[in-house]
Image 1 (cartoon, rainbow, N blue to C red):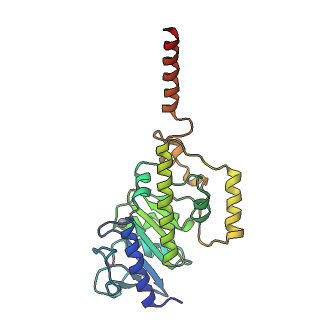
Image 2 (cartoon, protein in one colour):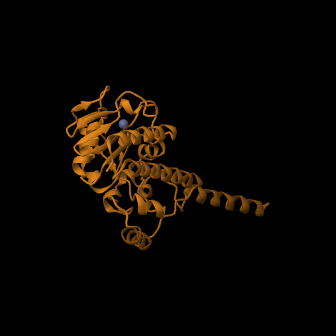
Image 3 (cartoon, rainbow, N blue to C red):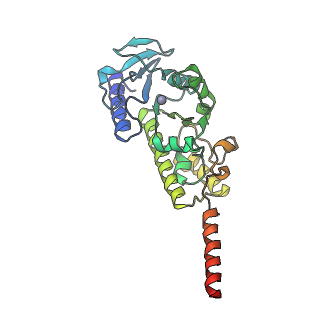
Length: 263
Ligand SMILES: [Zn+2]
């Protein structure tokens, strides 16, 4: 079992990675590991890219400080809510991944059935309802989504990923940000092709059988998350196979050719 010294080292290491990869900026984000009935977490107001093992704070399951120099983050309540609702998890990572966040701010879905690896490993990425950061409402907003998924987006705020260790929570975040980057390029190129329901069925069988992956995932075509507010297919700004601008180019080209033939 993980000891406190090792847990401190892991939090410092992941903090550096989050900062170096641009998944947090300045003093954003917070991390925690649950050790029995105590939680080791990052202090507020300092960059998680430059923390030392001795900077970390230890709290009890209600968030009351046991030891540490700094103050726990005001967003710690979100971590405590995640641990209360998911007894199977041991670590929580909250970050502000820019590409995922851009999709959410643009009202675009991160839950399309596009990349098989993502469908299998993290599944659809639900978005918790908007809540003012650092308030009790923020912690409440994650209760339902965190029961169903290890990866969630907080509306216009950031991400929350959980796992049975901090590396697994971190890798899920890396994967969702990478998927958002791929989707962004695909959209810029003008076409997002999705997998059929039968192909998704096969992937879900693989997840449970061959891969035997742990954690909670939502199906990418789950009804719950195909609401209008964040579905690419329903978005007026979406670029799909039937790209209207491509159709327009065709019409204009046709007209020009007709005119040339008349000359
Ligand atoms: Zn935040």
